[in-house]
Length: 167
Image (cartoon, rainbow, N blue to C red; front, side):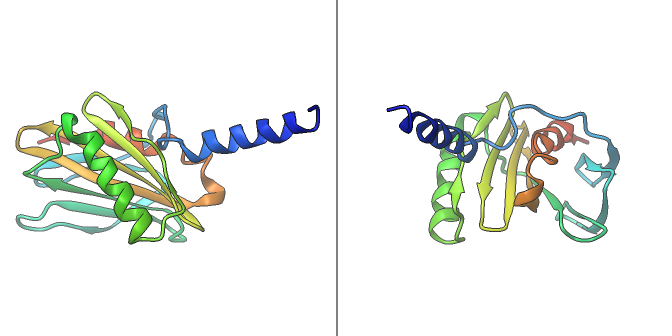
């Protein structure tokens, strides 16, 4: 029995990590504000904008200098509403596990008008986020980083999502 306890505890710790929603706390996000046509969002200091929407499509993509970390955010006139976050997460989970080859998808972390969902692949993690801004406005996106940098980017998705503002 004494030998079984450490194994059980290791399994519990691993399960808790694998089921993480992608950062239960938002970090203090330092960066620059991207000014889109319909929304603003904070781009982390370590990243530079690599693409942005023009015309009726409003989005932003950013990357670190060595391209190992990226983020994107896209505006929608047909947002996912907070009451639909759980269903959205379920659909994402099914798609990511069955079609995109994810190893695991955590439980959605819902905080008011923001949802974060952690999707873990073999070599990288995507913390997807949704920010509801009103009946006809929302932003969805993700921050993607190597698995070995998970601790460094913990809470970034939530902080990015909370920085989104409607113009």
